[in-house]
Length: 352
Image 1 (cartoon, rainbow, N blue to C red):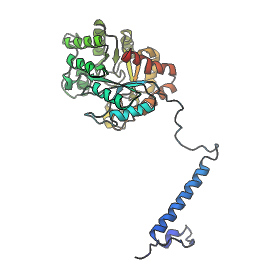
Image 2 (cartoon, helix red, strand yellow):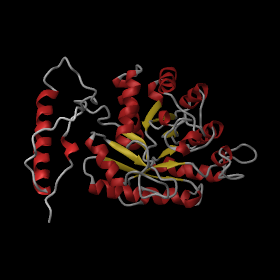
Image 3 (cartoon, helix red, strand yellow):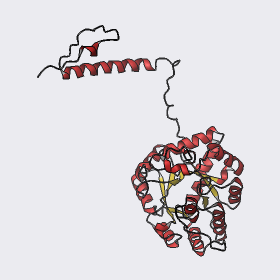
Image 4 (cartoon, rainbow, N blue to C red):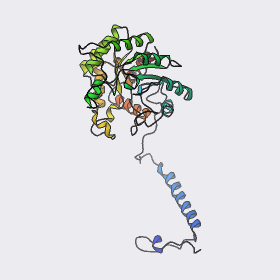
Protein backbone atom coordinates (compact mmCIF):
# COMPACT_ATOMS: atom_id res chain seq x y z
CA UNK A 1 0.00 0.00 0.00
CA UNK A 2 1.32 3.42 -0.91
CA UNK A 3 1.87 5.81 1.98
CA UNK A 4 -0.82 8.42 2.55
CA UNK A 5 0.35 11.84 1.26
CA UNK A 6 -1.22 15.24 1.01
CA UNK A 7 -0.62 17.62 -1.88
CA UNK A 8 2.03 20.21 -1.22
CA UNK A 9 -0.47 23.06 -1.52
CA UNK A 10 -2.21 21.81 1.60
CA UNK A 11 0.77 23.07 3.58
CA UNK A 12 1.35 26.41 1.87
CA UNK A 13 0.30 29.79 3.11
CA UNK A 14 -1.14 32.68 1.09
CA UNK A 15 2.29 33.57 -0.21
CA UNK A 16 3.08 29.99 -1.29
CA UNK A 17 5.91 29.57 1.16
CA UNK A 18 6.35 25.97 2.28
CA UNK A 19 6.54 24.89 5.93
CA UNK A 20 8.64 22.06 7.16
CA UNK A 21 7.70 18.68 5.78
CA UNK A 22 5.20 16.97 8.10
CA UNK A 23 6.44 13.96 9.97
CA UNK A 24 3.21 11.98 9.60
CA UNK A 25 3.69 9.51 6.79
CA UNK A 26 0.49 7.53 6.95
CA UNK A 27 -3.19 8.12 7.59
CA UNK A 28 -3.12 7.02 11.24
CA UNK A 29 -0.13 9.19 12.14
CA UNK A 30 -1.69 12.17 10.41
CA UNK A 31 -4.93 11.81 12.32
CA UNK A 32 -3.01 11.57 15.59
CA UNK A 33 -1.01 14.68 14.76
CA UNK A 34 -4.14 16.60 13.78
CA UNK A 35 -5.91 15.56 16.95
CA UNK A 36 -3.00 16.76 19.08
CA UNK A 37 -3.04 20.08 17.26
CA UNK A 38 -6.76 20.55 17.79
CA UNK A 39 -6.42 19.65 21.45
CA UNK A 40 -3.67 22.20 21.83
CA UNK A 41 -5.76 24.90 20.20
CA UNK A 42 -8.70 24.03 22.42
CA UNK A 43 -6.52 24.25 25.52
CA UNK A 44 -5.15 27.60 24.41
CA UNK A 45 -8.65 28.86 23.74
CA UNK A 46 -9.87 27.69 27.13
CA UNK A 47 -6.97 29.32 28.96
CA UNK A 48 -7.54 32.70 27.36
CA UNK A 49 -11.30 32.72 26.78
CA UNK A 50 -12.29 33.94 30.21
CA UNK A 51 -9.05 35.61 31.18
CA UNK A 52 -10.47 39.10 31.22
CA UNK A 53 -13.82 40.30 32.56
CA UNK A 54 -13.37 43.37 30.36
CA UNK A 55 -13.92 41.27 27.23
CA UNK A 56 -17.46 39.83 27.60
CA UNK A 57 -18.47 37.21 25.05
CA UNK A 58 -21.82 36.83 23.33
CA UNK A 59 -22.89 33.80 25.38
CA UNK A 60 -26.32 32.92 26.80
CA UNK A 61 -26.77 34.06 30.40
CA UNK A 62 -26.03 31.56 33.16
CA UNK A 63 -28.95 29.58 34.60
CA UNK A 64 -30.85 31.45 37.31
CA UNK A 65 -29.85 30.67 40.87
CA UNK A 66 -33.51 29.97 41.66
CA UNK A 67 -35.94 28.70 39.03
CA UNK A 68 -38.43 31.46 38.10
CA UNK A 69 -41.16 28.81 37.93
CA UNK A 70 -40.38 27.02 41.18
CA UNK A 71 -43.53 25.76 42.92
CA UNK A 72 -45.84 26.94 40.13
CA UNK A 73 -48.72 25.00 38.56
CA UNK A 74 -49.41 24.66 34.83
CA UNK A 75 -53.18 24.48 34.32
CA UNK A 76 -52.96 23.49 30.63
CA UNK A 77 -50.40 20.87 29.57
CA UNK A 78 -50.27 18.78 26.35
CA UNK A 79 -48.10 15.68 25.88
CA UNK A 80 -47.76 12.43 23.97
CA UNK A 81 -49.25 9.96 23.24
CA UNK A 82 -51.81 11.98 21.34
CA UNK A 83 -53.60 12.24 18.02
CA UNK A 84 -51.64 15.43 17.39
CA UNK A 85 -47.89 16.03 17.19
CA UNK A 86 -46.39 16.39 20.65
CA UNK A 87 -42.74 17.02 21.41
CA UNK A 88 -42.59 15.19 24.75
CA UNK A 89 -44.37 12.25 26.27
CA UNK A 90 -45.98 12.47 29.70
CA UNK A 91 -42.93 11.32 31.61
CA UNK A 92 -40.38 13.39 29.67
CA UNK A 93 -42.32 16.61 30.12
CA UNK A 94 -42.96 15.90 33.79
CA UNK A 95 -39.26 15.33 34.37
CA UNK A 96 -38.38 18.67 32.78
CA UNK A 97 -40.88 20.37 35.06
CA UNK A 98 -39.54 18.55 38.10
CA UNK A 99 -36.02 19.71 37.20
CA UNK A 100 -37.29 23.30 37.27
CA UNK A 101 -38.95 22.81 40.65
CA UNK A 102 -42.53 22.93 39.40
CA UNK A 103 -45.26 21.82 41.80
CA UNK A 104 -47.98 20.43 39.52
CA UNK A 105 -49.64 20.40 36.12
CA UNK A 106 -52.97 19.44 34.55
CA UNK A 107 -52.79 17.05 31.60
CA UNK A 108 -55.09 18.07 28.76
CA UNK A 109 -55.95 15.94 25.75
CA UNK A 110 -58.62 16.84 23.20
CA UNK A 111 -59.69 13.25 22.54
CA UNK A 112 -59.04 11.03 25.60
CA UNK A 113 -59.30 11.40 29.40
CA UNK A 114 -55.99 11.59 31.25
CA UNK A 115 -56.71 10.63 34.87
CA UNK A 116 -55.07 7.22 34.38
CA UNK A 117 -52.03 8.82 32.77
CA UNK A 118 -51.68 11.18 35.74
CA UNK A 119 -51.49 8.10 37.96
CA UNK A 120 -48.61 6.71 35.88
CA UNK A 121 -46.76 10.04 35.83
CA UNK A 122 -46.86 10.23 39.62
CA UNK A 123 -45.56 6.68 39.82
CA UNK A 124 -42.61 7.28 37.48
CA UNK A 125 -41.71 10.90 38.32
CA UNK A 126 -41.83 11.33 42.09
CA UNK A 127 -41.96 14.81 43.54
CA UNK A 128 -44.39 16.49 41.15
CA UNK A 129 -48.19 16.32 41.09
CA UNK A 130 -49.91 15.41 37.83
CA UNK A 131 -53.68 15.86 37.49
CA UNK A 132 -55.91 14.34 34.83
CA UNK A 133 -58.82 15.84 32.93
CA UNK A 134 -61.38 15.23 30.22
CA UNK A 135 -62.34 17.46 27.29
CA UNK A 136 -65.99 17.00 26.29
CA UNK A 137 -65.39 16.62 22.56
CA UNK A 138 -66.93 14.11 20.18
CA UNK A 139 -64.45 11.35 21.08
CA UNK A 140 -65.97 10.99 24.58
CA UNK A 141 -69.55 11.53 23.50
CA UNK A 142 -69.63 15.32 23.66
CA UNK A 143 -71.23 16.89 26.71
CA UNK A 144 -71.43 13.60 28.54
CA UNK A 145 -71.90 13.41 32.30
CA UNK A 146 -70.88 9.74 32.26
CA UNK A 147 -67.43 10.67 30.95
CA UNK A 148 -67.06 13.08 33.87
CA UNK A 149 -68.22 10.45 36.36
CA UNK A 150 -65.60 7.96 35.16
CA UNK A 151 -62.93 10.65 35.27
CA UNK A 152 -63.14 11.23 39.02
CA UNK A 153 -63.64 7.53 39.74
CA UNK A 154 -60.36 6.53 38.08
CA UNK A 155 -57.77 4.97 40.39
CA UNK A 156 -55.82 7.59 42.33
CA UNK A 157 -58.60 10.20 42.14
CA UNK A 158 -56.31 12.43 40.09
CA UNK A 159 -58.99 13.40 37.56
CA UNK A 160 -59.66 16.98 38.64
CA UNK A 161 -60.57 19.09 35.60
CA UNK A 162 -63.26 19.15 32.92
CA UNK A 163 -63.10 21.11 29.69
CA UNK A 164 -66.25 21.95 27.83
CA UNK A 165 -65.85 21.31 24.07
CA UNK A 166 -62.62 22.58 22.55
CA UNK A 167 -61.78 21.64 18.94
CA UNK A 168 -65.31 20.24 18.43
CA UNK A 169 -67.20 23.17 19.92
CA UNK A 170 -69.69 24.96 17.73
CA UNK A 171 -67.77 28.19 18.20
CA UNK A 172 -64.43 26.64 17.18
CA UNK A 173 -65.55 24.81 14.04
CA UNK A 174 -67.52 27.79 12.76
CA UNK A 175 -64.71 30.23 13.51
CA UNK A 176 -62.14 28.18 11.57
CA UNK A 177 -64.71 26.90 9.03
CA UNK A 178 -63.91 23.29 9.94
CA UNK A 179 -67.56 22.17 9.82
CA UNK A 180 -71.06 23.65 9.46
CA UNK A 181 -71.66 23.21 13.18
CA UNK A 182 -70.20 21.61 16.26
CA UNK A 183 -71.11 20.66 19.81
CA UNK A 184 -73.41 23.26 21.34
CA UNK A 185 -73.85 24.35 24.95
CA UNK A 186 -76.83 26.63 24.36
CA UNK A 187 -80.21 25.83 22.89
CA UNK A 188 -82.05 27.81 20.25
CA UNK A 189 -83.60 29.85 23.07
CA UNK A 190 -80.14 30.90 24.29
CA UNK A 191 -80.42 28.87 27.49
CA UNK A 192 -77.84 26.39 28.72
CA UNK A 193 -78.69 22.86 27.60
CA UNK A 194 -79.80 20.24 30.17
CA UNK A 195 -76.73 18.09 29.38
CA UNK A 196 -74.51 21.00 30.44
CA UNK A 197 -76.37 21.27 33.75
CA UNK A 198 -75.86 17.55 34.40
CA UNK A 199 -72.11 17.90 33.85
CA UNK A 200 -71.97 20.94 36.11
CA UNK A 201 -73.79 19.06 38.88
CA UNK A 202 -71.18 16.30 38.82
CA UNK A 203 -68.39 18.89 38.87
CA UNK A 204 -70.00 20.59 41.85
CA UNK A 205 -70.45 17.40 43.85
CA UNK A 206 -66.95 16.09 43.12
CA UNK A 207 -65.20 19.49 43.39
CA UNK A 208 -63.88 19.36 39.83
CA UNK A 209 -62.49 22.40 38.04
CA UNK A 210 -64.77 23.58 35.23
CA UNK A 211 -62.92 24.94 32.18
CA UNK A 212 -64.90 26.65 29.42
CA UNK A 213 -62.90 25.21 26.51
CA UNK A 214 -63.25 26.94 23.16
CA UNK A 215 -66.61 28.52 23.86
CA UNK A 216 -67.27 32.08 22.75
CA UNK A 217 -67.27 34.76 25.47
CA UNK A 218 -71.08 34.85 25.57
CA UNK A 219 -71.28 31.04 25.76
CA UNK A 220 -68.59 30.92 28.44
CA UNK A 221 -70.37 33.52 30.57
CA UNK A 222 -73.65 31.60 30.23
CA UNK A 223 -71.98 28.37 31.38
CA UNK A 224 -70.30 30.17 34.27
CA UNK A 225 -73.67 31.59 35.37
CA UNK A 226 -75.24 28.13 35.18
CA UNK A 227 -72.32 26.68 37.14
CA UNK A 228 -72.84 29.17 39.93
CA UNK A 229 -76.56 28.38 39.98
CA UNK A 230 -75.83 24.72 40.79
CA UNK A 231 -73.10 25.56 43.30
CA UNK A 232 -69.90 25.14 41.26
CA UNK A 233 -67.19 27.59 42.26
CA UNK A 234 -64.01 26.18 40.64
CA UNK A 235 -64.21 27.94 37.31
CA UNK A 236 -61.64 28.84 34.64
CA UNK A 237 -62.10 30.67 31.33
CA UNK A 238 -59.78 28.65 29.06
CA UNK A 239 -56.99 30.75 27.47
CA UNK A 240 -59.17 33.84 27.71
CA UNK A 241 -57.02 35.89 25.31
CA UNK A 242 -56.68 33.33 22.51
CA UNK A 243 -58.26 33.53 19.07
CA UNK A 244 -61.45 31.51 19.53
CA UNK A 245 -62.24 33.03 22.94
CA UNK A 246 -60.66 36.48 22.80
CA UNK A 247 -62.44 38.04 25.77
CA UNK A 248 -62.44 41.79 26.08
CA UNK A 249 -61.34 43.39 29.35
CA UNK A 250 -64.98 44.16 30.18
CA UNK A 251 -65.93 40.51 29.61
CA UNK A 252 -63.03 39.42 31.81
CA UNK A 253 -64.22 41.74 34.55
CA UNK A 254 -67.73 40.32 34.27
CA UNK A 255 -66.40 36.75 34.47
CA UNK A 256 -64.28 37.73 37.48
CA UNK A 257 -67.33 39.22 39.21
CA UNK A 258 -69.01 35.82 38.77
CA UNK A 259 -66.12 34.03 40.44
CA UNK A 260 -64.30 32.71 37.37
CA UNK A 261 -60.55 32.85 36.82
CA UNK A 262 -59.05 33.69 33.45
CA UNK A 263 -56.29 31.45 32.16
CA UNK A 264 -53.19 33.18 30.75
CA UNK A 265 -51.06 30.93 28.55
CA UNK A 266 -47.40 30.98 27.59
CA UNK A 267 -48.21 30.03 24.01
CA UNK A 268 -49.90 33.39 23.37
CA UNK A 269 -46.74 35.32 22.38
CA UNK A 270 -45.67 32.45 20.09
CA UNK A 271 -48.73 32.68 17.83
CA UNK A 272 -49.73 35.07 15.06
CA UNK A 273 -48.71 35.79 11.45
CA UNK A 274 -44.99 35.29 12.15
CA UNK A 275 -45.31 32.08 14.17
CA UNK A 276 -42.69 29.47 13.28
CA UNK A 277 -45.39 26.77 13.22
CA UNK A 278 -47.58 27.39 10.16
CA UNK A 279 -50.79 26.17 11.81
CA UNK A 280 -50.34 28.73 14.60
CA UNK A 281 -50.46 31.66 12.19
CA UNK A 282 -54.25 31.52 12.08
CA UNK A 283 -54.34 32.31 15.80
CA UNK A 284 -53.84 35.90 16.83
CA UNK A 285 -50.66 37.03 18.52
CA UNK A 286 -51.17 37.77 22.22
CA UNK A 287 -48.50 40.25 23.20
CA UNK A 288 -47.04 40.15 26.69
CA UNK A 289 -47.92 43.83 27.11
CA UNK A 290 -51.58 42.96 26.50
CA UNK A 291 -51.44 40.29 29.19
CA UNK A 292 -49.81 42.70 31.62
CA UNK A 293 -52.58 45.22 30.98
CA UNK A 294 -55.24 42.61 31.70
CA UNK A 295 -53.58 41.63 34.98
CA UNK A 296 -53.34 45.24 36.09
CA UNK A 297 -56.90 46.19 35.11
CA UNK A 298 -58.75 43.05 36.21
CA UNK A 299 -56.52 42.05 39.14
CA UNK A 300 -53.99 39.27 39.53
CA UNK A 301 -56.33 37.40 41.91
CA UNK A 302 -58.60 36.64 38.94
CA UNK A 303 -56.02 34.81 36.82
CA UNK A 304 -54.20 31.48 36.63
CA UNK A 305 -51.12 30.56 34.59
CA UNK A 306 -50.90 27.79 32.02
CA UNK A 307 -48.83 27.06 28.96
CA UNK A 308 -51.01 25.22 26.39
CA UNK A 309 -47.61 23.96 25.17
CA UNK A 310 -46.32 20.56 24.18
CA UNK A 311 -46.74 20.84 20.39
CA UNK A 312 -44.01 19.61 18.08
CA UNK A 313 -41.82 22.58 17.15
CA UNK A 314 -42.66 24.71 20.20
CA UNK A 315 -40.52 25.25 23.32
CA UNK A 316 -40.85 22.72 26.10
CA UNK A 317 -43.46 23.44 28.76
CA UNK A 318 -40.69 24.28 31.22
CA UNK A 319 -38.80 26.65 28.93
CA UNK A 320 -42.00 28.22 27.62
CA UNK A 321 -43.38 28.93 31.08
CA UNK A 322 -40.03 30.28 32.28
CA UNK A 323 -39.87 32.62 29.27
CA UNK A 324 -43.46 33.75 29.86
CA UNK A 325 -42.98 34.41 33.58
CA UNK A 326 -39.70 36.22 32.98
CA UNK A 327 -41.31 38.47 30.37
CA UNK A 328 -44.25 39.27 32.66
CA UNK A 329 -41.88 40.25 35.46
CA UNK A 330 -39.78 42.33 33.07
CA UNK A 331 -42.98 44.22 32.20
CA UNK A 332 -43.81 45.02 35.82
CA UNK A 333 -45.68 42.00 37.19
CA UNK A 334 -44.34 41.25 40.65
CA UNK A 335 -43.06 37.98 42.03
CA UNK A 336 -45.95 37.93 44.51
CA UNK A 337 -48.43 38.30 41.66
CA UNK A 338 -46.76 35.44 39.80
CA UNK A 339 -47.06 33.23 42.88
CA UNK A 340 -50.70 34.19 43.28
CA UNK A 341 -51.58 33.38 39.66
CA UNK A 342 -49.22 30.47 39.27
CA UNK A 343 -49.46 28.69 42.60
CA UNK A 344 -51.95 29.91 45.19
CA UNK A 345 -55.04 30.33 43.02
CA UNK A 346 -54.69 27.19 40.87
CA UNK A 347 -53.60 25.24 43.95
CA UNK A 348 -56.84 26.16 45.73
CA UNK A 349 -58.87 25.16 42.66
CA UNK A 350 -57.17 21.77 42.25
CA UNK A 351 -56.42 20.82 45.82
CA UNK A 352 -58.49 23.07 48.08
